Image 1 (cartoon, rainbow, N blue to C red):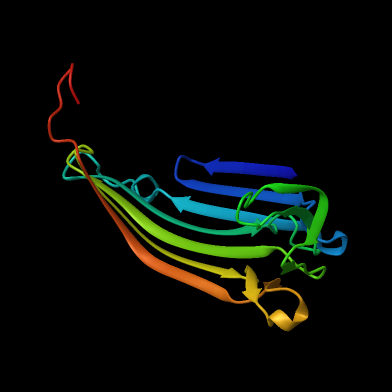
Image 2 (cartoon, rainbow, N blue to C red):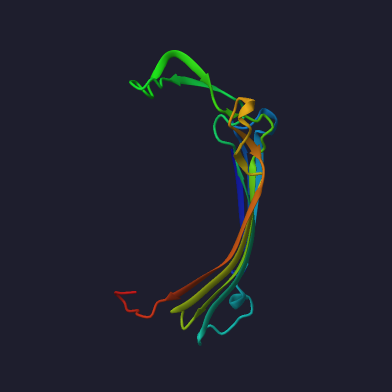
Length: 190
């Protein structure tokens, strides 16, 4: 894998972060064995930018947003059908390997597999009050995974029971809320 990242801040109020990663995987076919996934995040400390009086009830305010792409390779042995050691099923020695005997695995590999990708979007706000004794952090997120690598069932007449496929998508979304309370403060306890 190759990874690069850069973080830039401007006047203690605007922050930009960028990452880029490229990976090569031995579990994917040669034509599709590398995948690139970047990310970017931006945050703005508006309490600093707007010179807000933070000595009163309001102490701190920040808006943030991000986008990230994540890649995932295939499970081991997903691109081809493989032989494995044959096991006995004679009632006396069930499950023991038979020396020199092999059987074709029941999963049909797929030489056209591509990596899975997940895109994540997030936006949020962080607010602090009363000299940062009370804080609220709220964010909304949305994630969508595509080209999921799934061992799908296939007809037994093929000689296999499953085959790996890039199929389907799944998405999640939600809101995260966090409340921070730092009510008791002294020199020796926080």
